[in-house]
Length: 165
Image 1 (cartoon, rainbow, N blue to C red):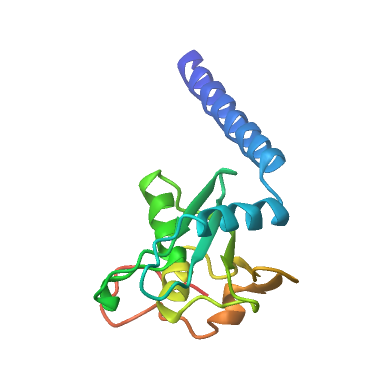
Image 2 (cartoon, rainbow, N blue to C red):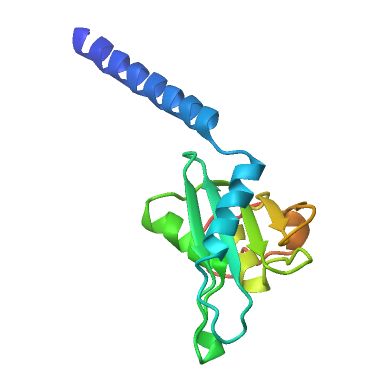
């Protein structure tokens, strides 16, 4: 009996530790302005020698950590990679799979929305992800991923993944 009490106590202590870590991450998580600033910093490092169109992204993980990405062009345009997906892949490499928000910055005078491929990749991890679109100057536009991709591809016959709403 003593052994089972010890196990319960250890599980309770671990659960309390996870909750405290989650609360600490929430307290230190950057706000919208900081996320947009991180996206603009990433945009400055974009590799866009062919189009000159630079894009930066900052993806806020559930841990409170910000994962940056930028577009990387290739002379064969089909091999280029968007900022949003490089941010997602950077997050995945570091072990993050749950996200709170993404900011996307461009040097365009108007906010630019993510392409369809980026929307689909983001929806793999969070359907209602807040999306902040930041032009070079001016007002940041706010959407949810569900607004930008209302009919995301989630299921197909034989899929091993559970259905999502």
